[in-house]
Each structure stands twice: as C-alpha cells, then as structure tokens.
Length: 285
Image (cartoon, rainbow, N blue to C red):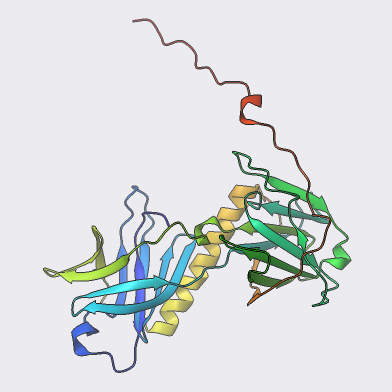
C-alpha cells in the first residue's frame, strides 16, 4: 500500500465510551507531494475502510487499549477485470501481471464441472511486466472465471475464485492482477490518540467532525474510487477510446480442478540478453 494517507470508518454496536473518540472520518495529506488525500472511515460496527487514490482496503478493527486500535485488513480482490471497445483490440483478452502468479482461468460455457486452464505454461520469471493479448471467440466469453492460489500452496489448496459476467456491448477484455492485494509479510497497523492527535504510525490524521452521513460518505468515496481506477487503467494500458467499465465479480473460495493446455506459452529472454544501457559522457567543465 502506498505511503499516502488514510480515511477510516468503524461500526461496533455498544462500543465502550473509551473508544468512541476514535470513531469517524479522517483524511491525511499525501507524503509524496501530490494533491490527493487519503481517506479513512472508522465505524462503530468494528469495520474500517481506507481509500487512497485508486487503491482500497477494508477490514476489521479491535481495541488495543483505551486510546489505540489495531487494523486487520481483509483479503482484497487478487484480480480485476475491465472491459472496453473501440481500441483495436476487439475479440481479444489482455492478461496483465499473471507471469509470477499461480493463476488459472475458465471461459464460458461456464459449466461448474469444467476444469480450469493454467494461465501460463510456467512462471516465466521475467524481470519486467508482461501483457499478453490472446484472440478469443467473443461469443464464448460472456462468462470468465479466474482462480488464484496464494503461496505457500499445494496441489489441493483452495483458490480464490472470481466469476465475471461480461456485458455483450464490450468486445475488449482486460484481466489485471492486483499486486497490492498479495501479502507482503505481517504488518502491524494501528491508530492511536496521543496528546490530542490521531496518529497512524508517524502520519497524523485529520478528523472531519462535519462529515456527511455514513451511507452518503461511502457512496461518494466508492464513486471516486471507481473513477480513479478507470483513469489508472486507461493510462497503464493506453486505452484511449470508448467507455471503460470495471466488472464486479462473484467471489468464492474453493478447490479447483486444473487440466492440461495452458492459455499462454512464452519464453522470456534471460536478463543478459538485453544490451547494457550506457549513459553519454558528462560535459567537461
């Protein structure tokens, strides 16, 4: 998660008065000089939400002491799917970020008994991002299911499964791995009220006492999050024309059956295959 800043909401019925001061809506300034703020929502039910530009984290919180709570993030979506049209990629699916992941895909007809196919023949271990476009029969892609296993995983380990229903009006499909959702070691995240300040580590949060009601606040933040995600994916994949829509999946956790014949087979050149980059000589004084 970027070292931007934060927003939080908490909801916990019958919350003790000692923690009531921490409930609410917070913002924080960016630490990298940009104008974008981070937004935190802490709710009474014991839930929290964090919006940072096109990134989103939610989960549960629990008290540490009367002035401090710890945040336990839930599992964010490991893969995202965007659709568009009019960008010279009609009848194609773009796979982005799957090279180093244990990922599998199944395309319609969406028979639950049909086995998945591995996205890549093997992990290419490329030291750069890979975007692979494959041709598909659009009529057979109204239903796409992606499964991803998190390490350490074995043959029978359950996968995170995402089923996407593709609207007929779109003929370009972009499947993107959400690298921010993959675990990167255990981190303790907490918010503390200390000496009249609300602190997330060494970042000071600004509590917003006149915030809108929770439903309206969440609707506004989710709407802005969607706009920021669309803007980011347009820039990353050079999608200049037509509408872009992010498809919300149905999610489950289950064991999967994997067949032969991976979707993509590539050979990445070794690192020393790229010519060295040499800089021009410095100007003589």
